[in-house]
Length: 341
Image (cartoon, rainbow, N blue to C red; front, side, top):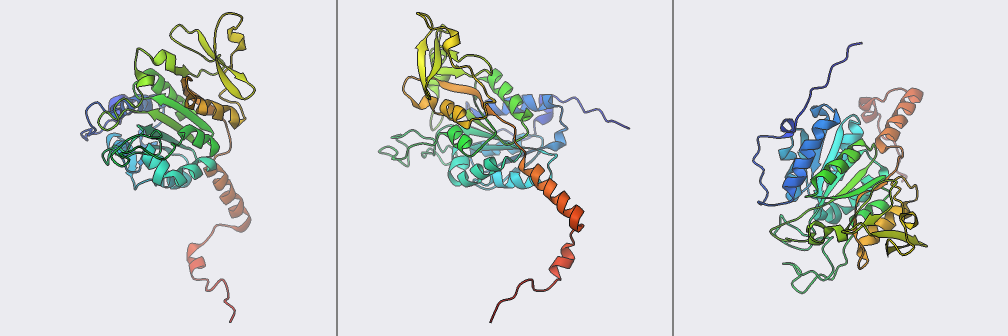
């Protein structure tokens, strides 16, 4: 048996000769840096990667990745990526998308790709705005937000992307932040290791049309009070002095201060492999409540059969029973139904 050693890649191997054309200071640069840094570590031949995108600032991603790729049409990246993965299950298919592309025109494709558990990794850049079209509100913009398309404030209530993904049955759901490079890279490694559908929300700053959208998460002076880093098997602790935690009272999360009879043993211990999606849903909804921190990390990681594997098994079983199909014979077989007079 002859084995071929995989080439040793560096970040440079995944960079292209294309000028990276995002606005100076855009959070997309940080995400690109993280992806190009992690891909060489995965031990996968470069020609097995495919990066698919739709339309939006984030969707320029395939131009800057020295892999196969598609810059497709608005909202349809999950559908195109599904076709690629079903036809070639051996490929590593990643989708780069934004909150508008993924959750507005592409919402239907997104939820069905997730519920099918197609083995695709989705990186959803969430800047809470339409950046490419110059500052209209998006499906994740805050209620009442004033934008070019809502000068008196939005009347819409925003999607919670991770709650939506969990509701659709995603088997891997995570959140990270563009400028948290160590955390983002580790999240990408865990995403790559998951076999089924993975959905990662990346909080990303659009410094031109929605600057500071995530200041409470990224500002060094306050982020320790506003960010809860989820660590599997560890109690949920946060705060500048690591003196606050989360416990459950029934199904309601509650912020408590450690001390005065409350210890780490009273806190909720994170279990990313909890089979009950309600647990992950509680975490996804946590920061919608006043005073609660924004959780980051892996919310859920659960194994189920992949869509492409189930489909391949069906094809093998039918072929074994009925023989290989003949498309030419099928097309020339004449009418296959009768229309009564």
